[in-house]
Length: 118
Image (cartoon, rainbow, N blue to C red; front, side, top):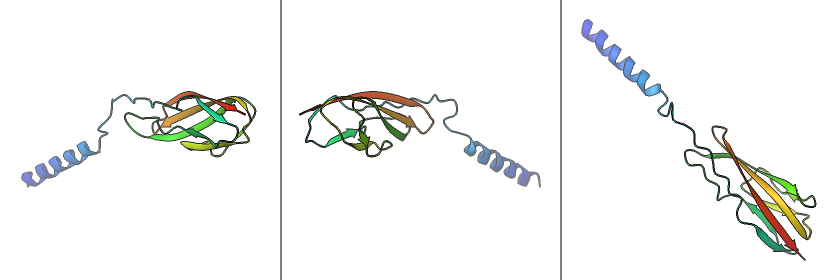
């Protein structure tokens, strides 16, 4: 009877060890936002914001967010997409901020300047 109890104890201890967080105590690395290089378009071009060069070294990017910082107000097709189009854009300079968030809540930002020529 003692042998049976010993086996049950070993199996319970092994199962408990498997449930522990394997990365417990490991520091979360923040994501790296990359809104791309500054862009120049003509007023007839389609303007696209592209944050797909952003990286997350130890997980995934769970959220993208584009925000217009300066310039005549424009419409961003989907502010929460990695790639989004911009409409109602007129000649001038614009600044956009890309914010990326990883699955653990760490954030990073990057700015993009867009110049529209006539």
